[in-house]
Length: 126
Image (cartoon, rainbow, N blue to C red; front, side):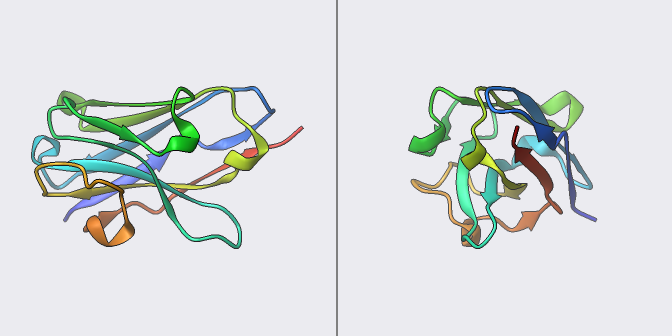
């Protein structure tokens, strides 16, 4: 059974950092592109970052460039999202998703990914 489980969310003050983890099971992470998405209250789910199978190509949405870093450790079946200098507008439920495509889509959409985690809540507030 293909499964993704996110963790690492929580409450953080503005300017703080969090590292999210996405642990996959039931499939070989080497064969999947992984995306991170987020959904703020009352808003649509948006793609945040994507990393190809080998980690050779990484994409970020403009609003998080220089702030978030995606990485993967295929040996640990885990993908990470390091989030620094967090702002209140980064508050959202964060999801990781997997797809067997070869490359990240030009702009990650929910329809581009076939397997989803349950999400982890990140709240940025003082």
